[in-house]
Amino acid sequence: MFSAIYPQFESKFKDAGYLRERAILTPLNKTVTYMNALIVDKLPGKLYSYFSVDSAEEFAGTDSDLSLSFPAEYLNSLHTPGLPLHELKFKEGVIVMLMRNLNQTIGLCNGTRMIITKCLKHCVECKVISGSYVGTRHYIPRINCCPTDSKLPFKLIRKQMPLQVCYVITINKAQGQSLESVGLYLPEPVFTHWQLYVAVSRVTSPAGLRIFIDDTEGGSTSVTDNVVFKEVF
Image 1 (cartoon, rainbow, N blue to C red):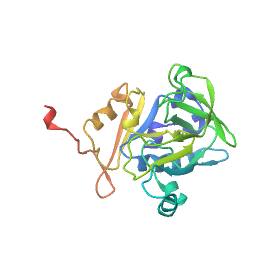
Image 2 (cartoon, rainbow, N blue to C red):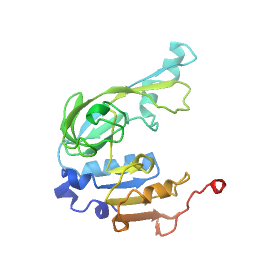
Image 3 (cartoon, one colour):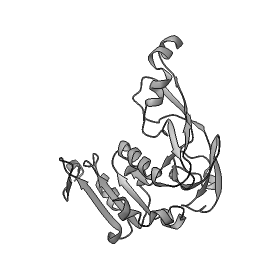
Image 4 (tube, rainbow, N blue to C red):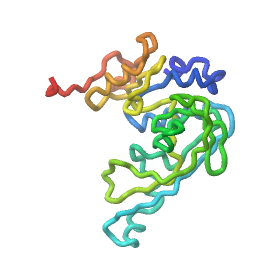
């Protein structure tokens, strides 16, 4: 699947035009995280790890209860949608996507795709490869991030660079983008209304679409479930 969407990756992994026109889409964040980690391992160069500083606020108990109930190790382990990972693993040449609006006047908006050009001690330098500000370079620092919709009994604050590796992205994150080459990977069926439609409509031509579906036994199949709310009809 990866070679079908990213052919000649070894020689073109820093080509902005090549990278901005392709992506693999999948429903779940856990699949995105796993596949992106495998792809980053394929790249040459030194691997840099950036760790977040996590804290909890707005808890009904005392500060002592908070520290005992939610230690740092537990907070670090949380993979909440909309938040960057506790440990970000980057190499120079990796493509990433912004997860927050940092400065819309210079094109640093949620969903902007960039290539990491330098990995520094406390931040990374990135070159924009999508949108109206293609080619501009920016330093992306750690900022305080918190989930907009969380069922946690406290407010999680994660100080981390608002970035995610984006060779593989969730279908929901791909909304609004048009790509020449799209791989739709379905290890399990989509789970919300119109999600399948959103995925296949990201590609500009049917010739650029590849769909990979796993069956219940781990093999491949050409059939998947769709989710349709009949009430809308």
